[in-house]
Length: 334
Image (cartoon, rainbow, N blue to C red; front, side):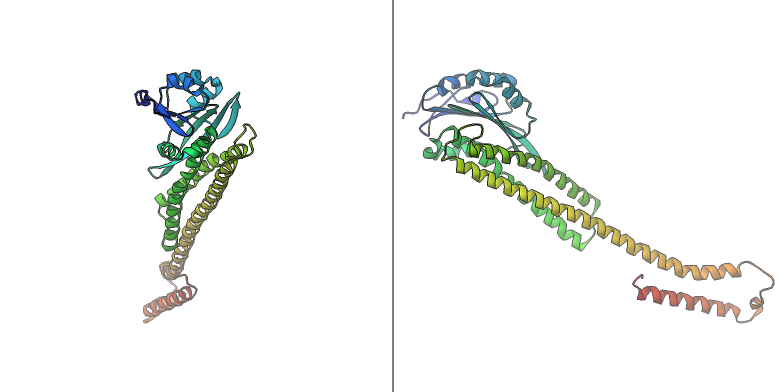
């Protein structure tokens, strides 16, 4: 099939890529205004990728593919939980993406409109570009010939795969913090970092768990008829998601134990310091008490007139302090 040249979509703000495919091979780059006409042609598939599009661009997409206003409103607001909804012949999928930004887990959103003859992806916030997905699918015309189902799977699989480097980085940092706990007490900044990591993992879990149900519906065709050859692929994505969920739960437990261990070590160190202070206070109480007794200046204290009384008191103080020091050392208080 000859390649039809068209004005590339780069001139349209918000449009990352827009192409039309037939029998698994790219036919042309298209403008949004031409997308509906191409999608209506038998055997043709339009795939449009958008990044933080304007309301005007989404309204044009809505007009081209006759999308439901509620789905367009969700795609514009971009504050949705992962879900799968059907509006007539259109399947609307909401997913959450994850990316490390300055050491924190940042979450974004990707909305997918999937219908007969078209797939539209709308990205918001932190997310990797889907250019590698497009390149990979275009390199496999046989798989791309499966149409909308395969593109939907490829995008979901890419999103789930990108959870892995985030988890690996957090795991490496958690293990580093654990090693430091065994060597010394954590600094306040490190304890704060433990808390932030655990909170970020909780946010990531809220993004992953609902996506498992989305893939389950796609796997079993609850809302839309998925090609039987594609269903095992969605099952594979579900398995990866469950593995990510297990890793998140395990890592949150590791961070919780590290946080508790840090608190326990801090309390243990405070206990040691308190015991040492108490021991020294007890030792110093002996000369303080004796000096207080002889500082009362009573006249009838016979030992005050004894020639060796001063030396005997000093010796008694030293002996008592020595005995207390020995006992405290024996009980590991000093």
